Image 1 (cartoon, rainbow, N blue to C red):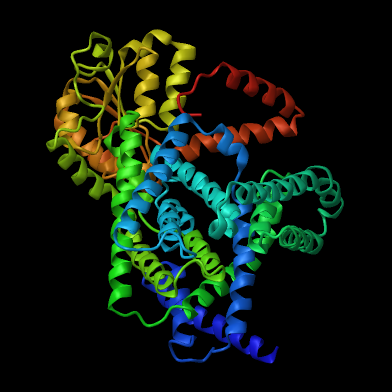
Image 2: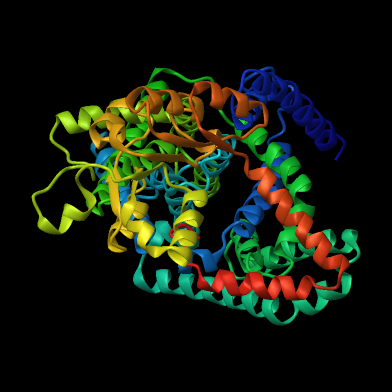
Length: 574
C-alpha cells in the first residue's frame, strides 16, 4: 500500500512538471503525461517498477475516463443528428475499418489464432481524439461552424462504435454466433438495468440531495462503481460498466451538475491513466518505429479518404468536406483504452501496443499543428483539387434552375452569413419582404447556400476573404455592402481588411461593418466604412429595457411580446 501511494505521488509530480512544459510549448497535455510515465516507468528511470501499482493506477484512471466519456455522449443529439452527419460517420467508420483490415493484414499483422493485432489497430485507427479536437476548435471558435458540427457529430458516433466493440471484445477469441449473442445479451441486460435505474430511481434520489454537493459527487461515483460491479458479475468488464454508467446519465436532468462536480476528479484519474500507459511503453526498436510510422500514415490517409469523400458526394463543398477530414486525422485517447483492453485480454502483442502509442504521440503533435493552420492548408488544397478537376459549389452549371444563384450581385450585398445576417434576413422578411429581391449573399457555407436559394434569394458560393471572389462576384457595382461577421469568426480576413478590399473595388458603395471591440470602430472608419455596428451596444439596450420592464412589473408582458416575435421568424441559422 505504501508503495502504491509513493508511485501515485511520483506520477502526479512528473505529470505536473512535464505538463507545465507542454503548456508553455503549446503541446497536448496527454503527450506530457505519456512522456512522464515513460520517464518514471521500468523502461525509463525505473522509479516505478511494481506491475501491480501500474495495473491499479491504469484501471482506476480508465474507469473514470470511460465514465466521463459516457457522460458526454448525448444520445438525444445523435438521434437528432442530420443525415449528413450520420452518412459521414458511417462512411468514415465502415470505410476506415475495411481499409484498416486490408492494410494491417497486408503488412503481416495477425487477425486470428488468439492474436488480433490487425483488428485492434483497425479499431484504434478508426477513432479520433475528442480531447485534442474539442480543445483546438474551442480555441479557434469553430465548434459552432458547419465543419465543427460535422466533426463533433462524427466523434460522437465514433464513441458509440467503440462501445459496441468493447461489448464484443471479450468474445473475440471465440467469436461464434452463440457466444456473440450471449455477449450482446449481457450488454443488453447491463444497459437496460442502468437505464431503468437512471430513469426511475436516480432522479428521485438526486432531487433530494441536489443542494448537497458532496452527496451529488459521491452519488455519481457510487453509480459509476455500482454499474461497473454489475458488469463484472455479468462477465463483462468494470470499464464497460463505467462507460454504460456515464451514457445512462448523459440525458439525466442533473447530468450537467454531475459532470461539473466530477470533472476535477476525472482529470486526476485520467492523468494517472495516461501516465500508467506511458509506463508500459518500452524503448522502441526499429520495427516498432516503422510500424508506428505506418500506423500514423495510414490513419491520416484513410481519414481524409473516408471523411472527405462522403461529405463531398453529399455536396457539402470542398471546404466543408476537407476541414472535418483534417480535424479528425489523429488517433483517439479512446484508442489507447481499446489497446489496453486488448493487452489485458492477451489479444495484442506489446510491440504492437507500443507502436500504437508512438503513433498516437506523433499524430497528437502533427494534428494540433495542422488544425491550428487548417484554413491556409484548406485553401491550398482546394486550389489543387480544382486543378485536378473536382468541382466546388461555385461551379457554374448550365442548369436553368441554378440561374437564381448565379450572375452579378444586386444592389445590397451581404458578405459572409452567420447569425447576425440570419436575423437580418428574417427581420427584412417580416418588415419589407420586397427588399429581399434586392439582396445578394456571398458565403461558403453549403447549408446557407442551399437554404437561401430554396427561398428564392440570390446567393453566390464563395470565400469573401479572397479578393478574386469579390471581384468576380461584381461587388464593385453594389450600392450597400454589409459585413456582419465579427473578426473572431472570420477565416483568412478581418473586417478592416475586407473594408479596404471592398473600398478599393467600389469607391462609391456605402459600407456597413461590424466591430468586436470599441477600439476597432475608429480603425474601420479609417479603412473606409460608412457605418460601424457594435453588437454589445444593441444588446445593452435590450438588457436595460428588460430591467425597466422588471421594475415596472411588465417583464411577463415583454416576454410574451418577444415570444410572439420569435414565433414569426424563419431564421436560416437557428
